[in-house]
Length: 104
Image 1 (spheres, rainbow, N blue to C red):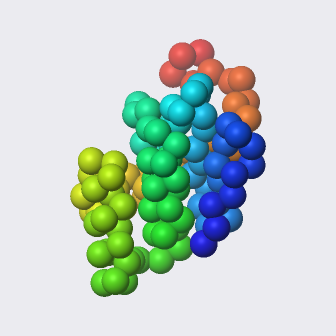
Image 2: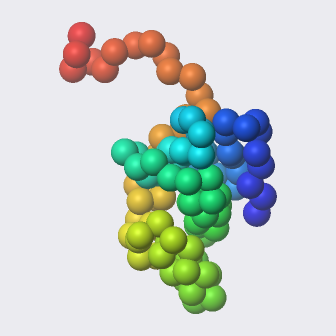
């Protein structure tokens, strides 16, 4: 699992489509935590969680690791994993500029 810093303003991982983007200073947003602003260290933690559960069900030892990581985000491991799996925003792809059908 590798978290790669693409620039001073974005973090990605080769294991997940989730990303973290800097929104100024040490404030980051992470694709699976919409509406929250994190510190840089919390963004690394969030990306580590997303990468850990990207392609398999966590093992018992991984749940213990995830519990500790999620605590740093104010979540339980189960809450964090649920959010990673349910939030499927791929922010690496630029927006199409199309409005949702319901707004047309």
